[in-house]
Image 1 (cartoon, rainbow, N blue to C red):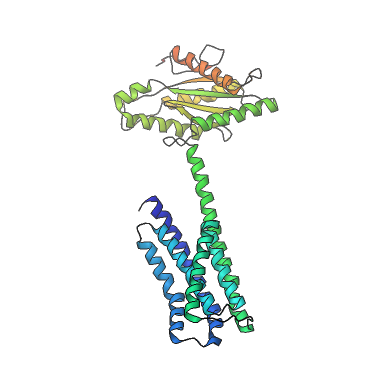
Image 2: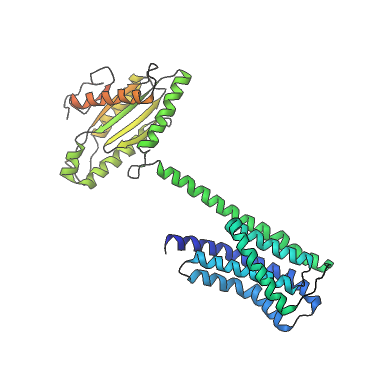
Length: 357
């Protein structure tokens, strides 16, 4: 089923519940108004069919339609037409008529706004016209006490049911919106923040450091010779390496740290309120642990990391300058042998490595 059809089927299911309840309660309201008029037997039959058979027929019609959304809108217009028909049949008895019209109007506004309210009103007027031709009604200006009480269930329970359905729909839409927002900010392969979302967080951290006069560090992480890994072991192996690194970042970073995939084989980390030496020690431990990982599918595969670190610099006027510092440190780490952590301005690895890759 297509996107539109799926949406329409969901609408049909919601309206099936509200229509079944509304027409059953409406039978009390209309029946109490019709009873003193002593209508023909066929009128009672039509009333019962409308109350107990039509909701199921409408649902099946929408369910089997090519585009359930459009079919359900036709069903709503039929509801409005029948509502107008019963208003005329009740001889415009004030309270039952007003209750019927207002419940239908509320339903139409909830489903399609003002535009559909106008379409439903036109269908109601057509229904009144057909009812007028059949019943040639007189205006009954008074509503009896029995008719008043018969209208109360529809007036009380149906708006409650419709409100609950609308609340559930709004809640579901809110949840879906939050999920879509999270997906739009997340890298699909690694589950970390994507490039744009991480840079947004970097800007937030930069502003916080400036405002609170506190320090911090950022790290850019590059998987050494990643293209060679893809060429030698295949892109599936490359994806496994990327996921392994993201998993290790999630497991080893502090709750306050913010990790993201900057792009390709580059990752990035914000380390709030962490001195540069401590950040370097944390990144060096990460580098060391990652280098010892084994890969069952490719036992010969060994992977190392080059990491560039930069501390927050109060002299910087823009977060991009902070990022440039980390990028320069990463460049030095890669150009001086890889498999090392270098801090901006140091030009030396955090720990001297015996076997740089």
